[in-house]
Image (cartoon, rainbow, N blue to C red; front, side):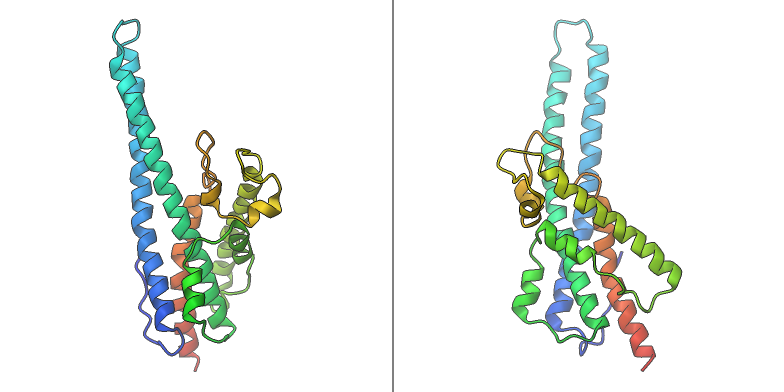
Length: 226
């Protein structure tokens, strides 16, 4: 998904556009890299399974053992890229929502410090609050708004589920949802447990990647009505 052209810089600040573009481009690359990492992991374990078949009953099993180690290395890379993708996708979702909310409600432009802060990974609670914002697609067709709200609600439910799952990790992770919501997902990642982003990262990447287009759409429609 290409980043839209923002020509009306009187509405968005230069830094807002720069921040939206930087996160958007970062997301596109990380999305592809995460897909490649997933494919690498799957291939590694498939090859291990094939090697186990032909070495079954044999004394020398170094082939499947080596592939098992390769699979573990692929797992670590996949997880690392997944956490990176989460860090930037969650920031892009919060930033994009904040900018869209600002232009829809004609709020004052943010300071440079506020924009920069929005580019950092948000807490799970901040992401949840951002996903709970409704009524921003005012220039879109009703059917599109309904579809978008369904996607947003699925993602919101996924984040709420992630907060609940994190409370069960132990190993220094808080056991109450309020404390977990105040922290970042990447701070709660623990080896030996399934990644907390599992099941919702792809949806978050798609959602965050769409927000610059929604901002552009609103500004273009608003300009046509002037």
